[in-house]
Image (cartoon, rainbow, N blue to C red; front, side, top):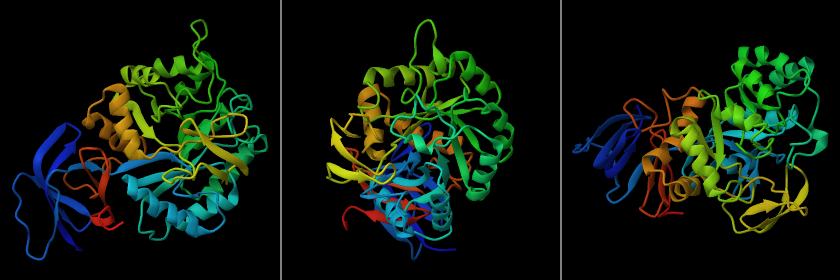
Length: 386
C-alpha cells in the first residue's frame, strides 16, 4: 500500500473555499481523509503544516524549460533534471511543450516511461509546424510547414499516443481538414500563432477547437471592426485559454479583462517558461532557436527585442494573478490546477485536494513561497533541506 502520511494543521485550499487548521491523511498515493482532527495512524509519517497553506499541485500545460534545462537538449537527463527542478515551484505535472522534431518527441516519450523523482510529464504540446508565418513570434521560419495529412500522420505516429495539445492556425489552407483526425486521436486542438479573422476562428471552434495558446500573444490583435480570433474566443464560452501572468506578456488590465470574460473555469495559468526560469542568469543560449537570449524588462528577448518565452514559475503566476487581478487564492489555485486538469480530462485524478485523488500537494507560506511539494504522497521537495 505504501507510506501513510498525515499532513497536520494546514489551511487547505479546495475548489469551494479554504478549510482552516485541517489535516490531510494520505494513504499510499491517494488522499483518504480531510478533516479538522485526524489521528495519526500507527507507523505513519507526520508533516507539521501549521501556518501553511495546502494547495493542489500546479499543472503547467505550456512549458519549455526551467532551472537551466529544457526539452530541447539532446540527452534524456536534461528533461529529468527539468522535472526535478519544477517541484521547487509547486509544479507537480506538466505538458512538455516543443516544436515538432522527431528526436525531441522520442526523448519525451522515453522519459515519460521512467521515474524522475520530480514532476510528472502528462504528454506533449506541439506549437509547430502548422502555424502562421506572420504570427510565429520567436519560432524560426524553417519550423513551419503547410498543413497536410501526411505530416500529421507522421506527427501522430512519432508522438505514440502522447500528443495532448496541438497548436495551429486555422486560417491556413488545409488546417480545418485535419480536425477530425486530431479529435479522433484525443488531441486538444488549440488556436495559436494565428492571424485568423473572427469568422475563421468561429469556424474552427465550431469544428472542435476548444483551447487557446497564450491568449493575446502571437495572434491577430482585437480591433473593433474586425475582432479577429480574440473576439471569437470571448464569444465562445466553452473555449478555455492559457494566460501568462508575468506582468510582461499581458498588462494587468488585460488580465483583468480576460478574468472578467472567461473566469476561473476557463483560464489555465501557464508559464511558457524557457531554461532561464528559476535561475539568476541574464544571458543564455536558447536551445529551441539556437540564438542568444537576454533577460530584459522581466522577459527573455532576442536582440530585436522580440520576447522568446518567459522566466515565470507557477508559484509566481499564482501570486501574480492575485496581485494583478484581485483573484482570491481559491480562484488562483483553481486556474493553476483544477482548470488545467479539466482541460486534459484528468480531473478525476488530479487538480484539487479531494478524497480519492492523487496526493499532489503544495505547502506554501503566507508569502506564497513553496515550502514542500508532494507527488502521489511522496515528498519530492522540502525547502528546509534544499
